[in-house]
Length: 399
Image (cartoon, rainbow, N blue to C red; front, side):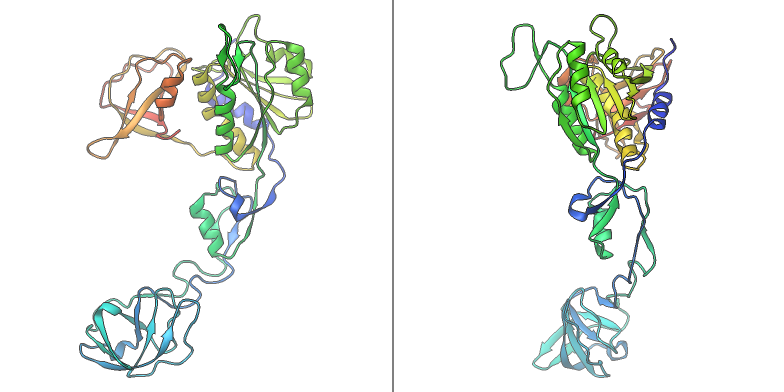
């Protein structure tokens, strides 16, 4: 059976996923969520002409070196001055405060000297006005954030500036993570001579959290197909991610368990390395199941390529194309017939360009290499040998 490409497999997965019902989300909980509706400004920002500096609000016609102006009050942030500034007058003003009526300029405090109830200017008329015009940031009715954006602290700040305390977002998908394999023991427990610690579940739980999902690690199901099926049937989730039991042979137990529950497989392997055994299915009620290999590198590469877009789709968003370009620091040999995602370290070069250096050992079981990597170099099928200095596709530089 010819395996689908990464793009073809992802398209099949996304075609099977429907967004969860949106929910009203407080700003404090919105980081990483996908916005479902536009955010529109309900007023101008700033809502008045505002001072950009601490100093003195004056009329431009009065600004001249040596001018002496009568101080008539103060405009502070949150406490404006309603009195009109007439010719020959000035008002003390702080950064962000509203410009009093009649004033059209701010003389910064470094360019003036206060003498009792008077201020003597040292500024000339050709300096900056130091005024933020009303609406210079955004205007009433302007769409500030479009539906489909993923929220971050900067975008949350913009929504808050528009007065929005609640945003309509995709919900945090409930992601159940199921590890299989008699060889696994949980970190912190005693490991037998033929056992290894379960690194897949904790790492994928962290991955889900970074992508605004709510992870639940299910008890390990070992290598028993009935236990695997029962654990899946009793779990509550929007997306199930299984780790291990995805290869071929006697220990390929998860797919038979899913089929036994009435699940239909849409993907049974992908033309990639590491991660060829990645698979995808839908349960009879439509809930998706993503099967990842047990090797740590294979699982995390699969998560980057498939789990992240699936989490976005469940939230009503679409994961951005995160592939960029970088300069190869050392040569790479020709690639075989599958996509190869080479673990690498990205760092700034002397001219500012990113340099990526692949690790020498790409064995998919090496957790040390995965922990040291902050980028994946994508090698297309049958790509020829690449020399140092060539430009390559990179996922990263921070995974």
